[in-house]
Image (cartoon, rainbow, N blue to C red):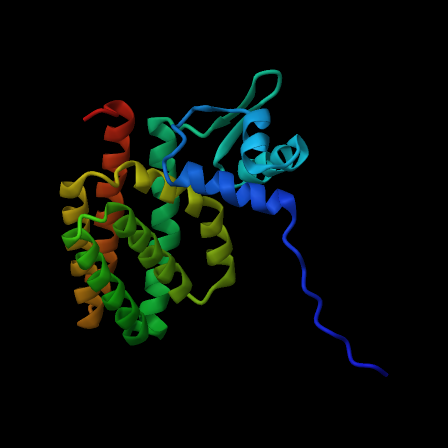
Length: 223
C-alpha cells in the first residue's frame, strides 16, 4: 500500500476575508457599532461579496459583528450590563484556569508570564501601546493555556477576540497601561512565591478594574 501524503489545505477566501476584517475590528480601525459594507470590503479585499458575507457569519459567531436583517452588518457594541456579564465569565474562566495551573505547573507558567511582563515593560518604555496590549492578550491566553483543559480554552476562545477588541480601545492611555503593568507584576510575583491564593486575588482584582475601565470607555468615550 502506498503511503499517504499529507494534504496541504489552502486557506479559503472566506477565511482570509475573516482574518482581514477581524484584524481591523480588533485593532480598532473600525469603530464599535460602525456599519460594514459588503461591497466596500469586497472591493478592498479583491474578492466577490460572497466570501465577505460568509466571513461576517464567522465573525458573528465570535461576537465581533452584529448582523441585523434588512439593516446590515455592524461592528459589535456592548451595554454596561453586557460588560458586567462578560467580566463574570472572565473571572470564572481565568481564575479557574489559574487555580488549576497553580496546582500543576506554577513554576513553568510563572516563568512564561515573567518573560511576557518583561516585554510589556519594554513596550511601555517605548510608548508602543499596541504591542503592550498584544502582550497583555498573550499573558491572559497563557493563563488559560496553563489550565491544560481543552474545554476552558474553547470557552475562552469564544470571547477572546471581543476582550482584545475592548483592550485595544484603551491602548493609547499610558496611565492605564502603567497601572495594568503593575497589576500583572504583582500577579506574577505572587506565582513566583508560590502564593496561589494571592495570585488568584490579584487576577480577580485586575479583571474587575479593567471592567470598570471598559464601562467608563462606553459611558465617556472621549475621556
